[in-house]
Image 1 (cartoon, rainbow, N blue to C red):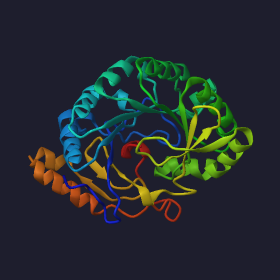
Image 2: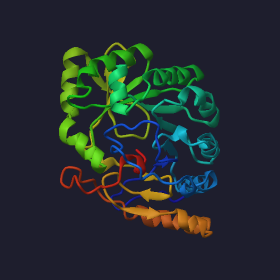
Image 3: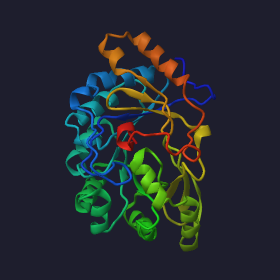
Image 4: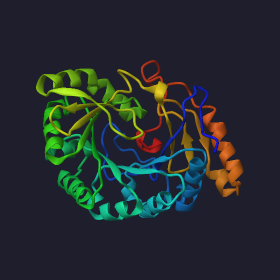
Amino acid sequence: MHQLVDPFQRRISYLRVSVTDRCDFRCFYCLPKGYKGFAQPETWLTPGEVERIVAAFARMGVSRIRLTGGEPLVRPDCLEIARRIGACDGIEDLSLSTNASQLARHAQGLYDAGVRRINVSLDSLRPERFREITHNGDLGRVLAGLQAAKAVGIDPIKINMVAMKGVNDDEIGDMVEFCLREGFTLRFIETMPVGDSGRSAGDGHYLSLRQVRADLERRFRLEPAVMGGGGPAQYVRVKGTALRIGFITPISQHFCETCNRVRLSAEGTLYLCLGQQDRVELREPLRAGVSDEDLEGLIRAAIARKPERHEFRERPDQVMRVMALTGG
């Protein structure tokens, strides 16, 4: 097996697979108001096509797969895709990013398909504020989904909170207490200028996680910690508890030198960096009958083009696509 290594000697071991760009929420930092540019379902990769691409990556040493969206659970055959990926040789870790609105009815199916870890986007514990951020999302359904995931044995469950000045920065301590009580891991994320919605959120609401961490250190006793997974979070533990808190800092302290991932969109576009435009199209070669060997060649050629780093600070207007299109 020849591992995937990019021009900067970073080993690529993690593939994020978007199964749809659609979502039943419309968080203002992710989708622009009135956005209607969603892909049509017939343009999505089929479960078999996703499986072929994942199997090709697995043959080249990728062992971690995360299903993303949009909201992956709004796609009717999401569980079939999960089952196919879970059965691929070489895939050791299958996880899911979700808003948990559909999780209560799918938790058991996901577990049976091999999903053992989930990340849940949750920016507020106040129903009215949650509804405002998500444009009519139901916090009760999200909380029910989290309990269903716990009940079937999915662990860890990570709560992802986008920390935003003037929006939810007064709930940061409350979210820590919630995760302490429920046994969840908590991760804070800085807003990123991806698409018009991301830029507008960042312009008015960007909050450096250095400040968040400093505030938490005044309230809780924190100590360095580590946590398994393929992501970039830097973790601490609340001393005397099992709670780990991660900080994902693409703006204030980027982690590009250790980037180990690429992203596959629902339509088969392989994005090589969240903050750059580099991409390779895989759907058309698949539908034209590309061989497994040539598919691997296309992927290797793509990885050879992976840029060294994003330029969110230097060129915030560079990435025009919305976050939901890229796949989180």
